[in-house]
Image (cartoon, rainbow, N blue to C red; front, top):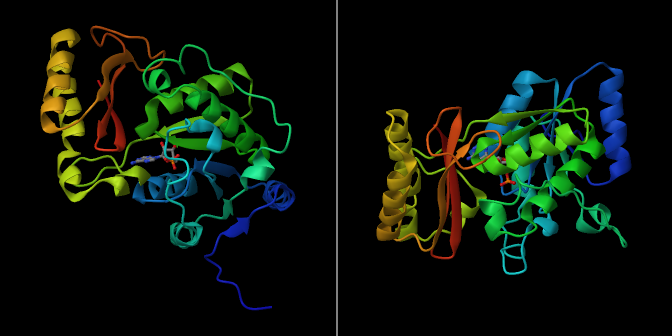
Length: 286
Ligand code: AMP
């Protein structure tokens, strides 16, 4: 047998071997943390892996570009995929296993179950991406059942997704703890995203304005200003910078995601906007 690099994660593509590996770790009393991803890994993902290694013994990273969370006119077919590069990054990050199931194994002939998180999954991105959060909740429930981790980590970058998953896990009594991890950003404030590679050079210069507008509004809200006028001005500023369309810029309760006018309880300012063909999302705490 060729020597194996001790830093390489186990690369698991079938459910049986995945379950055997996890069962072995469990028998040894080791805790397991799952980081679900769609691959095209960047330092934002790797921060989740580092966090997983800091809080648990074994970090399992799933890589699955989930077709059911993409709309018919969205970027499923052109979504960046590079498993070899991802595996090299995961080795550097100290991940213990990469779980990369294929679509046919995840959704065998006759697959017919879906999880809907009503309310939380309907507004904001859900209004513009019908079926998206149902696709996310369904695939994440499957991943949680496949790996059975103690803890699963999700980025606050996708804040609505994090809240949808928290709710699904609570509602379905899934035996896992869901934790959010703060957004990792470029030096100029742009939230890292696999989709940033779609941005042209000019768009890349404009993209950080999204975070800048959110940060400025959040600061004003923190000083007691009302949301209505600030949000209208923010939308106009983003449009003037070249975002088109600005799908939403809204202040929501951080847990229920209901619209709020003032941040009495912890709130979240969330936005989604197109820059050319690229849809960017971001959010900040208020
Ligand atoms: P994705 O591959 O885009 O589905 O993302 C996989 C996980 O990484 C999700 O939980 C994301 O919220 C998280 N994530 C993506 N980008 C970032 C970022 N810039 N900072 C922190 N977490 C992120």
